[in-house]
Image: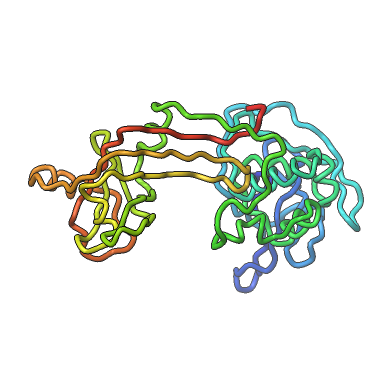
Length: 310
């Protein structure tokens, strides 16, 4: 039996084979992931040292296996109501992409000015496990999230990404933000995939409007599908502005790109056929939308907000 930090230890019922008890593995005693383990049980929220028997199995998360492991470190695991236990926790040698929860936890910890060790102490967990949550795609238990939220002065909903239905940008601003202009090439790179952008146009009765559309880039042109009688169709044969952005609420940074240029309806049969065959930006609104509009950017500008030290 081998496990990683964050895996789940499941104890099956001898009679039915169903899960009788489960917990999160928060401490390893051997660098190769063999037992025993420090397990935080989901039913009691207590951490105990476990030597798994024949009725136990490990439910693995998705892990990236490093080719080498450094020398293991030994630190005491302290938890409310538990004796101090020595354990060994291997750390990955290669950087991995953290999950959304990990990014939010790390961002909140840094906003509070807490070190990894201090935040782990407040959350009553091992520093190795907190590092694991921040650095790798983890799915902590509800009990773990409750302790992290309390330690970081936030809520479980916020750590899970709650508030997705709220307008973006309501998070905390960076302490030392840096706003810089993007080059035209950087703007093209950020535009060069399909997604959702906003078209600024004048309606047929002369009123201004901003409309979101699913778009893609074809031959350096921004193209989208719509219906002839729809609001986005009013962009055809006019000069429009097209805006795309991305906000990372967890890290309080992001970018925006603005393209300005003439918009035209694509009428050449071969061009329409090619767009229809290779389209991967299906309109979320559904329905019959077989009118293609192409925007040829005359100007491309953009800005990015990052921490001042990046």
